[in-house]
Image 1 (cartoon, rainbow, N blue to C red):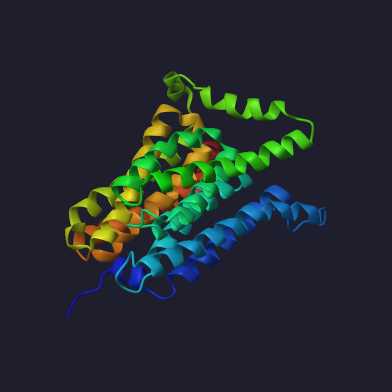
Image 2 (image 1 turned 60 degrees about the vertical axis):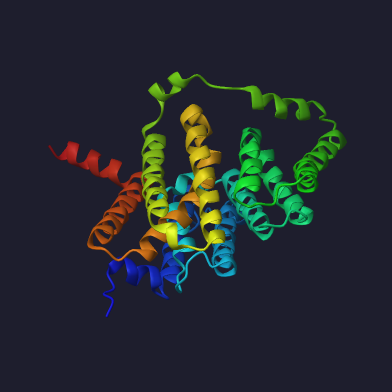
Length: 332
Protein backbone atom coordinates (compact mmCIF):
# COMPACT_ATOMS: atom_id res chain seq x y z
CA UNK A 1 0.00 0.00 0.00
CA UNK A 2 1.34 3.40 -1.02
CA UNK A 3 1.72 5.69 1.97
CA UNK A 4 0.18 9.12 1.54
CA UNK A 5 2.09 11.90 3.21
CA UNK A 6 0.75 15.34 4.09
CA UNK A 7 1.69 16.77 0.69
CA UNK A 8 -0.26 14.02 -1.10
CA UNK A 9 -3.30 14.40 1.12
CA UNK A 10 -3.34 18.13 0.40
CA UNK A 11 -2.61 17.73 -3.32
CA UNK A 12 -5.28 15.08 -3.89
CA UNK A 13 -7.83 16.36 -1.39
CA UNK A 14 -11.22 17.40 -2.71
CA UNK A 15 -11.45 20.16 -0.10
CA UNK A 16 -8.10 21.77 -0.91
CA UNK A 17 -9.36 24.24 -3.50
CA UNK A 18 -12.58 25.21 -1.62
CA UNK A 19 -10.55 25.86 1.54
CA UNK A 20 -8.06 27.96 -0.43
CA UNK A 21 -10.93 29.97 -1.93
CA UNK A 22 -12.45 30.62 1.51
CA UNK A 23 -9.07 31.69 2.92
CA UNK A 24 -8.47 33.91 -0.13
CA UNK A 25 -11.86 35.59 0.22
CA UNK A 26 -11.20 36.17 3.93
CA UNK A 27 -7.81 37.75 3.16
CA UNK A 28 -9.36 39.95 0.49
CA UNK A 29 -12.15 40.99 2.89
CA UNK A 30 -9.57 42.00 5.49
CA UNK A 31 -7.68 43.96 2.87
CA UNK A 32 -10.90 45.70 1.77
CA UNK A 33 -11.71 46.56 5.38
CA UNK A 34 -8.29 48.11 5.94
CA UNK A 35 -8.21 50.09 2.70
CA UNK A 36 -11.84 50.98 1.96
CA UNK A 37 -13.67 50.75 5.28
CA UNK A 38 -15.89 48.00 3.94
CA UNK A 39 -17.55 47.44 7.31
CA UNK A 40 -17.59 51.09 8.41
CA UNK A 41 -20.55 53.44 8.42
CA UNK A 42 -18.60 55.76 6.10
CA UNK A 43 -18.32 53.10 3.40
CA UNK A 44 -19.29 54.32 -0.07
CA UNK A 45 -20.82 51.67 -2.39
CA UNK A 46 -18.74 52.92 -5.34
CA UNK A 47 -15.66 51.67 -3.47
CA UNK A 48 -16.76 48.14 -4.34
CA UNK A 49 -14.89 48.73 -7.60
CA UNK A 50 -11.74 47.71 -5.72
CA UNK A 51 -13.22 44.20 -5.52
CA UNK A 52 -12.78 43.78 -9.29
CA UNK A 53 -9.18 42.45 -9.04
CA UNK A 54 -10.41 39.84 -6.54
CA UNK A 55 -13.08 38.68 -8.99
CA UNK A 56 -10.49 38.51 -11.77
CA UNK A 57 -8.21 36.35 -9.61
CA UNK A 58 -11.13 33.96 -8.96
CA UNK A 59 -11.75 33.80 -12.73
CA UNK A 60 -8.05 33.06 -13.27
CA UNK A 61 -8.24 30.25 -10.72
CA UNK A 62 -11.23 28.76 -12.54
CA UNK A 63 -9.41 28.91 -15.87
CA UNK A 64 -6.44 27.08 -14.35
CA UNK A 65 -8.81 24.34 -13.17
CA UNK A 66 -10.09 23.99 -16.73
CA UNK A 67 -6.54 24.02 -18.13
CA UNK A 68 -5.52 21.19 -15.81
CA UNK A 69 -8.54 19.08 -16.72
CA UNK A 70 -8.44 19.74 -20.45
CA UNK A 71 -4.72 19.06 -20.92
CA UNK A 72 -4.29 16.47 -18.12
CA UNK A 73 -1.36 18.33 -16.60
CA UNK A 74 -1.71 16.19 -13.46
CA UNK A 75 -2.59 12.51 -13.90
CA UNK A 76 -4.42 12.15 -10.59
CA UNK A 77 -7.47 14.01 -9.34
CA UNK A 78 -5.96 17.22 -8.07
CA UNK A 79 -6.72 20.91 -7.93
CA UNK A 80 -3.16 21.64 -6.86
CA UNK A 81 -2.31 23.92 -9.80
CA UNK A 82 -5.18 26.33 -9.17
CA UNK A 83 -4.75 26.01 -5.39
CA UNK A 84 -1.04 26.81 -5.64
CA UNK A 85 -1.77 29.86 -7.77
CA UNK A 86 -4.38 31.03 -5.28
CA UNK A 87 -2.02 30.52 -2.33
CA UNK A 88 0.74 32.46 -4.11
CA UNK A 89 -1.71 35.29 -4.84
CA UNK A 90 -2.65 35.38 -1.13
CA UNK A 91 0.99 35.40 -0.02
CA UNK A 92 1.83 38.24 -2.43
CA UNK A 93 -1.53 39.98 -2.06
CA UNK A 94 -0.26 43.59 -2.44
CA UNK A 95 0.70 42.74 -6.03
CA UNK A 96 -2.81 41.53 -6.91
CA UNK A 97 -4.95 44.29 -5.39
CA UNK A 98 -4.88 46.68 -8.34
CA UNK A 99 -6.55 46.29 -11.73
CA UNK A 100 -3.33 46.34 -13.78
CA UNK A 101 -1.72 43.09 -12.51
CA UNK A 102 -5.10 41.37 -12.36
CA UNK A 103 -5.79 42.07 -16.04
CA UNK A 104 -2.23 41.10 -16.99
CA UNK A 105 -2.67 37.79 -15.14
CA UNK A 106 -5.97 37.06 -16.88
CA UNK A 107 -4.61 38.00 -20.31
CA UNK A 108 -1.58 35.75 -19.86
CA UNK A 109 -3.65 32.75 -18.76
CA UNK A 110 -6.01 33.21 -21.72
CA UNK A 111 -2.96 33.48 -23.97
CA UNK A 112 -1.65 30.16 -22.64
CA UNK A 113 -5.04 28.47 -23.06
CA UNK A 114 -5.26 29.40 -26.73
CA UNK A 115 -1.61 28.57 -27.40
CA UNK A 116 -2.01 25.11 -25.86
CA UNK A 117 -5.03 24.50 -28.09
CA UNK A 118 -2.76 25.02 -31.11
CA UNK A 119 -0.33 22.28 -30.06
CA UNK A 120 1.23 20.61 -33.13
CA UNK A 121 -1.16 22.44 -35.46
CA UNK A 122 0.69 24.79 -37.80
CA UNK A 123 -2.64 25.79 -39.36
CA UNK A 124 -4.18 26.94 -36.06
CA UNK A 125 -4.07 30.62 -36.98
CA UNK A 126 -7.31 31.31 -35.09
CA UNK A 127 -6.02 30.03 -31.75
CA UNK A 128 -2.71 31.85 -32.19
CA UNK A 129 -4.50 35.07 -33.16
CA UNK A 130 -6.63 35.05 -30.00
CA UNK A 131 -3.63 34.07 -27.85
CA UNK A 132 -1.59 37.07 -28.97
CA UNK A 133 -4.62 39.36 -28.87
CA UNK A 134 -5.04 38.44 -25.19
CA UNK A 135 -1.35 39.05 -24.54
CA UNK A 136 -1.60 42.36 -26.37
CA UNK A 137 -4.38 43.47 -24.00
CA UNK A 138 -2.03 42.83 -21.09
CA UNK A 139 0.74 44.82 -22.78
CA UNK A 140 -1.55 47.85 -22.91
CA UNK A 141 -1.04 48.05 -19.14
CA UNK A 142 2.73 47.45 -19.34
CA UNK A 143 4.25 47.94 -22.78
CA UNK A 144 7.53 46.29 -21.69
CA UNK A 145 5.70 42.94 -21.76
CA UNK A 146 6.25 43.08 -25.51
CA UNK A 147 9.84 42.02 -24.78
CA UNK A 148 8.39 38.59 -23.92
CA UNK A 149 6.81 38.20 -27.38
CA UNK A 150 10.00 36.86 -29.06
CA UNK A 151 10.27 34.29 -26.25
CA UNK A 152 6.69 33.19 -26.93
CA UNK A 153 7.47 32.92 -30.65
CA UNK A 154 10.47 30.69 -29.89
CA UNK A 155 8.35 28.51 -27.60
CA UNK A 156 5.61 28.42 -30.23
CA UNK A 157 8.23 26.92 -32.55
CA UNK A 158 10.06 24.60 -30.15
CA UNK A 159 7.47 23.60 -27.52
CA UNK A 160 3.99 24.23 -28.93
CA UNK A 161 5.20 23.07 -32.36
CA UNK A 162 2.72 25.34 -34.13
CA UNK A 163 4.97 27.99 -35.68
CA UNK A 164 4.53 28.65 -39.38
CA UNK A 165 4.25 31.69 -41.66
CA UNK A 166 0.48 31.46 -41.25
CA UNK A 167 0.53 31.44 -37.45
CA UNK A 168 3.29 34.07 -37.35
CA UNK A 169 1.11 36.50 -39.32
CA UNK A 170 -1.84 35.61 -37.10
CA UNK A 171 0.25 36.44 -34.02
CA UNK A 172 1.18 39.84 -35.45
CA UNK A 173 -2.43 40.67 -36.26
CA UNK A 174 -3.57 39.50 -32.84
CA UNK A 175 -0.91 41.55 -31.11
CA UNK A 176 -1.86 44.66 -33.08
CA UNK A 177 -5.61 44.32 -32.53
CA UNK A 178 -5.71 45.81 -28.98
CA UNK A 179 -3.51 48.68 -30.14
CA UNK A 180 -5.80 49.45 -33.07
CA UNK A 181 -8.72 49.69 -30.67
CA UNK A 182 -6.73 51.70 -28.10
CA UNK A 183 -5.37 54.06 -30.76
CA UNK A 184 -8.89 54.71 -32.08
CA UNK A 185 -10.07 55.43 -28.52
CA UNK A 186 -7.18 57.82 -27.83
CA UNK A 187 -7.71 59.67 -31.13
CA UNK A 188 -11.46 59.91 -30.44
CA UNK A 189 -10.69 61.43 -27.03
CA UNK A 190 -8.34 63.94 -28.63
CA UNK A 191 -5.22 62.37 -27.12
CA UNK A 192 -3.18 61.11 -30.09
CA UNK A 193 0.01 61.86 -28.14
CA UNK A 194 -0.92 59.03 -25.76
CA UNK A 195 0.03 56.53 -28.49
CA UNK A 196 3.58 57.91 -28.73
CA UNK A 197 3.89 58.22 -24.94
CA UNK A 198 2.85 54.60 -24.51
CA UNK A 199 5.50 53.25 -26.88
CA UNK A 200 8.16 55.61 -25.54
CA UNK A 201 7.95 53.67 -22.30
CA UNK A 202 9.34 50.56 -23.99
CA UNK A 203 12.73 52.25 -24.33
CA UNK A 204 12.82 53.41 -20.71
CA UNK A 205 15.30 51.38 -18.70
CA UNK A 206 16.47 51.79 -15.14
CA UNK A 207 20.12 51.15 -14.16
CA UNK A 208 20.99 47.93 -12.37
CA UNK A 209 22.03 50.03 -9.39
CA UNK A 210 18.34 50.25 -8.47
CA UNK A 211 18.88 46.90 -6.73
CA UNK A 212 20.78 48.89 -4.09
CA UNK A 213 17.64 50.87 -3.25
CA UNK A 214 15.02 48.18 -3.75
CA UNK A 215 12.32 48.10 -1.09
CA UNK A 216 12.36 45.18 1.38
CA UNK A 217 8.78 44.26 0.36
CA UNK A 218 9.83 43.74 -3.25
CA UNK A 219 12.96 41.78 -2.28
CA UNK A 220 10.97 39.45 -0.01
CA UNK A 221 8.38 38.70 -2.70
CA UNK A 222 10.99 38.16 -5.41
CA UNK A 223 12.92 35.76 -3.18
CA UNK A 224 9.75 33.89 -2.18
CA UNK A 225 8.53 33.33 -5.72
CA UNK A 226 12.01 32.56 -7.08
CA UNK A 227 12.46 29.89 -4.39
CA UNK A 228 9.21 28.12 -5.29
CA UNK A 229 9.91 28.44 -9.03
CA UNK A 230 13.40 26.95 -8.73
CA UNK A 231 12.15 24.02 -6.63
CA UNK A 232 9.36 23.27 -9.09
CA UNK A 233 11.48 23.66 -12.22
CA UNK A 234 14.50 21.66 -11.08
CA UNK A 235 12.39 18.79 -9.83
CA UNK A 236 10.18 18.80 -12.93
CA UNK A 237 13.16 18.31 -15.24
CA UNK A 238 14.43 15.62 -12.86
CA UNK A 239 11.16 13.69 -12.63
CA UNK A 240 9.37 14.21 -15.95
CA UNK A 241 11.25 11.74 -18.14
CA UNK A 242 8.32 9.31 -18.09
CA UNK A 243 5.69 11.94 -18.92
CA UNK A 244 3.93 12.15 -22.26
CA UNK A 245 5.64 14.39 -24.79
CA UNK A 246 2.80 16.91 -24.82
CA UNK A 247 2.77 17.18 -21.03
CA UNK A 248 6.52 17.77 -20.95
CA UNK A 249 6.24 20.41 -23.67
CA UNK A 250 3.53 22.36 -21.85
CA UNK A 251 5.40 22.31 -18.54
CA UNK A 252 8.58 23.36 -20.31
CA UNK A 253 6.65 26.30 -21.74
CA UNK A 254 5.92 27.43 -18.16
CA UNK A 255 9.52 26.75 -17.11
CA UNK A 256 11.09 28.83 -19.88
CA UNK A 257 8.58 31.66 -19.56
CA UNK A 258 9.27 31.70 -15.82
CA UNK A 259 13.00 31.90 -16.49
CA UNK A 260 12.42 34.79 -18.91
CA UNK A 261 10.34 36.63 -16.28
CA UNK A 262 13.03 36.08 -13.63
CA UNK A 263 15.68 37.43 -16.00
CA UNK A 264 13.46 40.42 -16.81
CA UNK A 265 12.94 41.13 -13.10
CA UNK A 266 16.68 40.79 -12.52
CA UNK A 267 17.41 43.40 -15.18
CA UNK A 268 14.48 45.69 -14.35
CA UNK A 269 13.23 45.09 -10.78
CA UNK A 270 11.00 48.16 -11.06
CA UNK A 271 8.80 46.03 -13.36
CA UNK A 272 8.05 43.55 -10.57
CA UNK A 273 4.33 44.55 -10.19
CA UNK A 274 3.31 43.53 -13.74
CA UNK A 275 5.76 40.60 -13.95
CA UNK A 276 5.10 38.94 -10.59
CA UNK A 277 1.54 37.80 -11.54
CA UNK A 278 2.89 36.23 -14.75
CA UNK A 279 5.62 34.61 -12.69
CA UNK A 280 2.95 33.24 -10.33
CA UNK A 281 1.08 31.63 -13.24
CA UNK A 282 4.29 29.99 -14.51
CA UNK A 283 5.34 28.82 -11.04
CA UNK A 284 2.04 27.27 -9.91
CA UNK A 285 1.98 24.28 -12.35
CA UNK A 286 5.65 23.44 -11.74
CA UNK A 287 5.34 23.50 -7.96
CA UNK A 288 2.02 21.63 -8.10
CA UNK A 289 3.55 18.91 -10.29
CA UNK A 290 6.37 18.33 -7.81
CA UNK A 291 4.22 18.17 -4.69
CA UNK A 292 1.58 16.00 -6.39
CA UNK A 293 3.82 13.39 -8.02
CA UNK A 294 6.41 12.87 -5.26
CA UNK A 295 5.92 10.89 -2.06
CA UNK A 296 9.31 10.96 -0.37
CA UNK A 297 10.08 12.06 3.16
CA UNK A 298 12.33 14.85 1.86
CA UNK A 299 9.66 16.24 -0.49
CA UNK A 300 7.15 16.18 2.36
CA UNK A 301 9.54 18.19 4.55
CA UNK A 302 10.06 20.62 1.69
CA UNK A 303 6.29 20.93 1.29
CA UNK A 304 5.89 21.78 4.99
CA UNK A 305 8.75 24.28 4.78
CA UNK A 306 7.13 25.88 1.72
CA UNK A 307 3.83 26.22 3.60
CA UNK A 308 5.62 27.91 6.50
CA UNK A 309 7.49 30.20 4.11
CA UNK A 310 4.23 31.08 2.35
CA UNK A 311 2.56 31.91 5.66
CA UNK A 312 5.55 34.02 6.72
CA UNK A 313 5.48 35.93 3.42
CA UNK A 314 1.74 36.53 3.75
CA UNK A 315 2.15 37.81 7.31
CA UNK A 316 5.03 40.05 6.22
CA UNK A 317 3.01 41.54 3.37
CA UNK A 318 0.06 42.12 5.68
CA UNK A 319 2.25 44.08 8.07
CA UNK A 320 1.72 41.67 10.98
CA UNK A 321 5.43 40.93 11.38
CA UNK A 322 6.30 44.64 11.31
CA UNK A 323 3.71 45.42 13.99
CA UNK A 324 4.97 42.50 16.10
CA UNK A 325 8.54 43.79 15.90
CA UNK A 326 7.38 47.27 16.94
CA UNK A 327 5.57 45.80 19.94
CA UNK A 328 8.66 43.82 20.93
CA UNK A 329 10.89 46.88 20.65
CA UNK A 330 8.48 49.04 22.66
CA UNK A 331 8.16 46.41 25.38
CA UNK A 332 11.89 46.51 26.12
